[in-house]
Length: 175
Image (cartoon, rainbow, N blue to C red; front, side, top):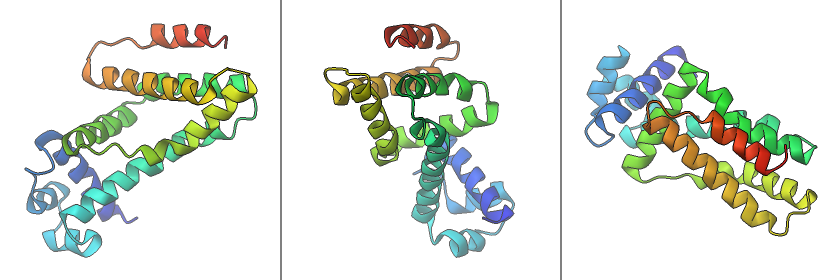
């Protein structure tokens, strides 16, 4: 990706999240990015193409975040890494800003993108199976849902402290 494409995506992500996807024009994105509107069309086709690129960027970053976790052979360590992932992300200001914007777009357009969670879901199911949980699929689903809720609260509730809940989850799963 070129530097100008990155500028366009960053500007679009920020504007879509702040003003809403439907309310943001490509001319406004171009002005914010310091490029011509024609350059947006050349690289992304149209506003929908720009949105697709932003969503794809989120999926790529999610894969990067989950890569070390899904490759972890020890099931308890896999669970610990997944549960602690959100604490690590919460300490990175750029990552927080990126994911906040991704979540805002997801909520506005009612796009969940559950396919980006498939690899981590399968890894969690396998971990719970290897740890002999009675219902590994349901445990994985529960943990995914809890962590999604924690991420949502962290994003929406300014002073939310997730560390206590993370510690509780680690105790629950004996990690």
